[in-house]
Image (cartoon, rainbow, N blue to C red; front, side, top):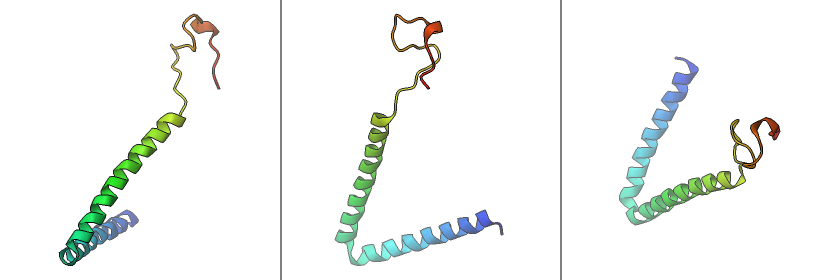
Length: 82
């Protein structure tokens, strides 16, 4: 078995064990588990949206070859911003 197949088998086994454990805990502590699951799901979505927003606000806009910084500057006079 190759290294990738071993890692895949471990991930598969961990997911099955996690699913069984989640179901077992859900059976005994239903309300608490559902509240924690809902909170984590919402927190993950909001964190991803926050990361996208942060990336969009801190990344400089791209300057394509046929664009210039101002409309009255000819393409031949535009210098590379780098």
